[in-house]
Length: 435
Image 1 (cartoon, rainbow, N blue to C red):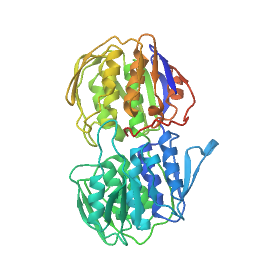
Image 2: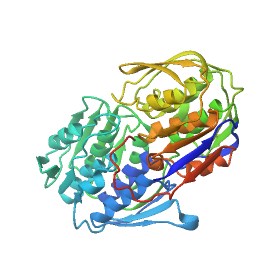
Image 3: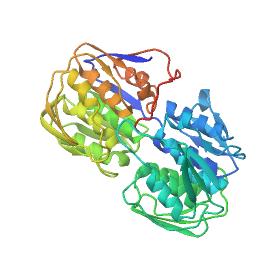
Image 4: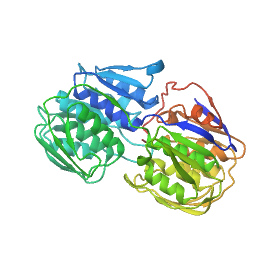
């Protein structure tokens, strides 16, 4: 089982580059189901979830070519044949985003069997909104033996109003709507950059979409889509994690190949803590800190608010800020599993339901800690970067789901971090975790 060994105390200095967004890449890979022609995606991150998605598509009869060498961040997907439109439990259980094939399979093949994804380490994320929307579009859905089976001879446009904002629900039904007959109007949609990324790919494939990035999306269904070549947006959560790394280590770090517009909520909060932010280019953010950070409260919200996927990383930063930072988690009910491990390292954190009060600055000391999910893993890496001594992080396969060789990137800007084990080694005990 892979581990990270991290010795804290080094300020991070230099330039660190951001990979493509895996939360954009996953729905974009699923969108390839909608056409018989090739879809080529560039800036694909080399992370575990991408390999899982490849296995999922391949199990349904698709050809998925992952690049190597100079083309390592490119993949070409051919779904000319969908011989087995089933998302099997053995694959779905390891990645919640596997449910994104439901909409495109019904739209393209008229049938889909998708294993129920079950629970999630950070809280329940039922797909009832996916089901409700597809039923409104004319699909018949039954559940049996742990699988959802959806059938529709031809999906029909509909007026869909989400009961609550859902990123995956917006993406799944958007993919279903592009091949539906007539107009589909979707209200209370997610506005995340990952949704606009998917919409841009679908448009390049011939879809007619208006309003992506707003709360109301209109789709005029078309009879077929064609192939396309598309470049995935940078990963805003990876970029935000590196910005926090620069601030928490009192470093001078330039985060390159990112989109600063996607980071406005995170940047505003870092400036509130006293970090200095500059923009050396249109796709770069420079963060400088003297280590004298001030407490600042956060409350997670849907985009463009402060992202839930940055909450754990911000909490690590708050342990080093003067005063009490109040962290309120509004998106997931069980996203404080990193707290116990931070406390073991010396953090002063008090929990009350979905609210955490973090008193700093705390002198963190090295410890052996356990990674519980993707973003919790990132928070422990950040804490270890400033802890006194050598920390050992276990179960870092969670980190590998969404960060591309993070230890190599951090080592390149001065961190003392080593991996023990084999990257991407098979994990029999993996379960669904966060995004």
